[in-house]
Amino acid sequence: EVIHMLKLKSLDDLKRIREDAQQSLKTRLDTGTTIIVGMGTCGIAAGARDTMHAILAELASRNIDAHVTTVGCIGQCVKEPLVDIEQAGQPRITYASIRPDMVPHLIEEHLINGRPVEEWVVGRMDKN
Image 1 (cartoon, rainbow, N blue to C red):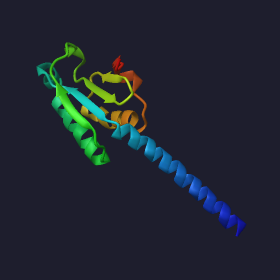
Image 2: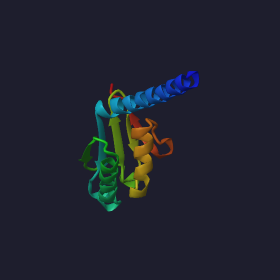
Image 3: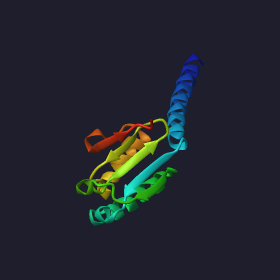
């Protein structure tokens, strides 16, 4: 019976840890996640439309509710497709040259794990 209690306790601990992690993820996503894709002529020419479709598909498959929007050219044509991710209380992160095959890793790391993919980052903009 003591063994059963220990087992139950560790199961509860596991459940609590899982719930904490889910709560942390929920907070990050609920406080407003905006993904901005550069869709100027240069972005579209560089494949931004496919990148945007990949982002929408990835969010849908993971059931993540993020606001996806587009902007025109921001003057970094050579780095297109540009993708910005903005989350409440975090700096806005700009990623460069994001192809559709890079999207799952980007969403996994930045949105799910809360870790920007540093090697793809070309800019950060703090809210203030």
